[in-house]
Length: 194
Image (cartoon, rainbow, N blue to C red; front, side):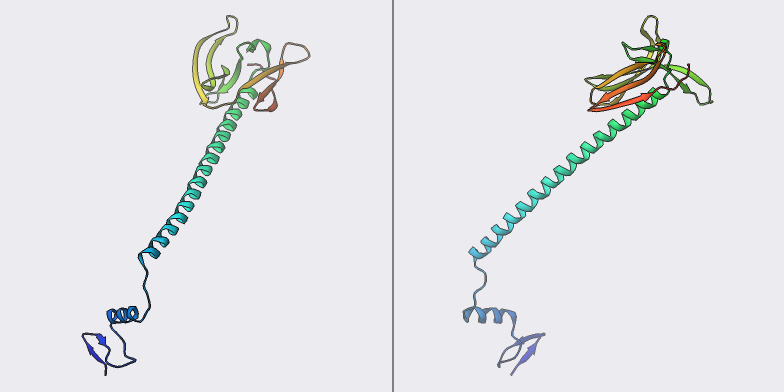
């Protein structure tokens, strides 16, 4: 006979639902064993080993992603710097008197906010600090800056080399050959006088 008291069933005959504590005690007595401490430790050690392997893989993947992102960021910064350099060259004067090839200073035309053009002198230099853009007033006769503003364009830039190509009459520059990181580009100067 099976009696239910406070929603807990007690076993008086076969087939009735047993109390969980009684069922556990009966299964242990019947030869069914629960987890031993040794088995539990083996499971914990194996789980920890696989967790450490997975964590190491995830850390290595994160480092690789960070290195790739840093490399891509460096490439993008260099591309932006080269683009700015090319824009300066395209706006540069082709007249030989507007260039100082030894210091690599040239005069270019820029527009102010009212739309009027005016000349400004620009120089690009690579130093141990990175790529520098110098802008201001330059005396081409004395070969020195009167007033200048130095801007760091890029911190980790590859060395640049500029080669000016003269025209047939030797009075003008036709193009600038730009060498950086194994890339060789020719930038043609506009035929204008500043």
